[in-house]
Image (cartoon, rainbow, N blue to C red):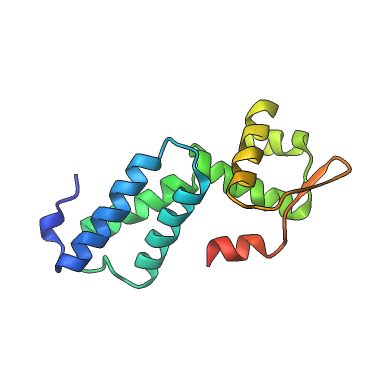
Amino acid sequence: MIDLGQTRGWQEREALFRDVTMAANLRNKSDFTQTLAVHAALQQALRGNLYKRDPKVLGAAQKLVRILEGERSTYGRQLRMIQLMQKGATIDQMGRQLRCSRRTLFRYLNHLESAGIDITLDGSEYTVSKDLLKLLRA
């Protein structure tokens, strides 16, 4: 458990509480846009050394980023799916790489499209903009 009282200032406590609470609530959900916002906020806080004063908070934030980016996380698999689609990938190729069913892949495609990601089907290959992942990682 993270002790919010150990952080240095009220702004730091508020930012940490918001990031951790949102991420904990979204961990098992598939709302890509909201999870992306949490992921981006955590990465920005880590890059800006917001959590450097408290090793426990820093460790928790780093662990949460690893969980979000991991292959057991829906969001992590969706990020990997975007990476595959940047080069062009068929449903079968994505299924093998992500180790999931066609039904799950189509559900992920729907989630990504509803998040505003432009996915193109060219023949049997799904593609996204080559610059998309740069935007997601920024």
